[in-house]
Image (cartoon, rainbow over all chains, first blue to last red; front, top):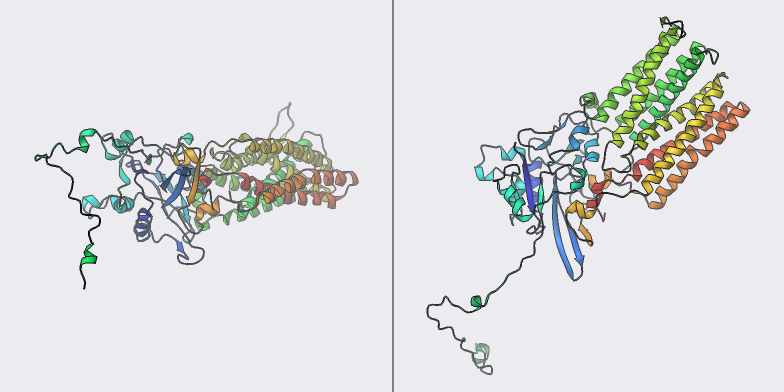
Amino acid sequence: MTQLALVIDLNVCVGCHACVTSCKQWNTSGAAGSLMDDNPYGKDPTGTFFNRVQTYEVGEFPNTETIHFPKSCLHCEDPPCVPVCPTGASYKRAEDGIVLVDYDKCIGCKYCSWACPYGAREIDEKQKVMKKCTLCVDRIYDLTLPEAERKPACVLACPTSARLYGDVHDPESEVSRAICESGGYPLMPEWGTQPANHYLPRRKTRIKIHADELTRVDNPLKKDGHLPETDKNAPFLEDSTSW
Amino acid sequence: MHPAFSVIFLTTLIGAGQGLFLALMTAETFSHLGALPLQDNAFYSTGSLLVLGFLVAGLAASFFHLGHPERAWRSAAMWRTSWLSREVIALPAFMGIVFVYALLHYLDWNPTVFGTTALPETGLTLLVGIIGVVLCFALFICTAMIYACLKFLQEWHTPLTAINYTLFGMSSGFTLATAYAAQYSSEVTGLFGTWAIILTLAALVTRSASLLRNRRIKHRSSLRTAIGVRHSKIQQKSQGAMGGSFNTREFFHGKSLAFVRSIKWIFLLLVFPLPLLLLGMGLNNDNPTLLLMAFAVQYVGLLAERWFFFAQANHPQNLYYQTI
């Protein structure tokens, strides 16, 4: 069974918000209508976003690390938001595991947002229906797009390739391998929601330099000498030229 | 959580209505068993109309909670999984049976349904009333389980939530019934009053238990599990949006700790000792005004209690909004 998901590499996310803006752009221009964006340049801007990047500082100065943390719907394998919906507007697709909201059925009771421990659901306060990340379901199946572009907008926009997208149930997929190899983890595992989206942790990078890497053993001429040094007291170019 | 007044009014109003209906049925059962003289039909029909009034008012309040009230009819669809859906079914069903109960008494139509030598003859109104009692308790459970079933809202996820909703509904309903019966200067005033006092005391015990439980609650989620970083020092630097959002409005009560604490003491005062005092004085002096005041005071207290119930619940999504 397919379970599409995002895998987000916190090691390379630089917090540029490109995923946020591309998500907003794609999903606000879609068939479902715009995502609320009230007073965007005013004093109290507010709006509906499927994806937000938060920033955390871990550690104590001077040993701190900044973690940029993008968060959207995690498309849980056992989504707590689905069974509580009184109208059946919230559902999880059997064929690809995407959790979606039928905007025409949603009565805007907000119960699903209470039932989501991640705060991934946001009500559109203009349209009065619950909205959330659709994994760009209208993009990834669009056969008119070139195959390379059949990915969520955030994945395409990420300049550092911090976001991977694919089937986490397929052990051969890029995302499954990334989870295996880099220790991918779900958020709040204590609630048993089994989020499909995973995060790859920050990693320490260490380089070990061997002695033979310092001398150029591969130089066929083996004539590495010192560069000719100029006389420290010799006049500079500016000193010796006049305009 | 952000306390929504539509939900506060819904739960308190239907609770009082349900309790009043249970009181009426207590009176009917007692007179059926011969323990009390039979009340006249008007007592029951007017009483159940009052019940209906509370239920309709509660239902009307609930619509203000919906973004699309015109689609509310859809909300009975998922009764297999959703307690909200079950409440949406239980409430009109209960309203319907209360209406039938009121009508039967109004028309004075009470044919014997069955009777044996061991049991006294059972009339139609009693049978309809018993169905009503079952639906009434089902409604209490449905309403409370909407909150109690959310396991990560640990303040709510306890059987005490269901017990409290039921006991508060019953105590306010019986207090209302006492005031109502006193208007009729009926013999059942004492019975209702006694039950109102017992139920209020019982609610005091269970609500105190839930307050104590919530005070020492250990939250299972922390910022560490929320973002998956195992470090003792994590500080949020940005929340991902410059202004507020749905997430910062829906899950925070937006009041100071001192305000929340004072609401707690206000409800503890208004729901328990004051109505008990007024009930005692009203029953002793046969004073219907004091009994009505007991209900009014307790109802206002229950509004505060429900506000506190919502405000106290700490949603784990708030972990993502450490500095708002």
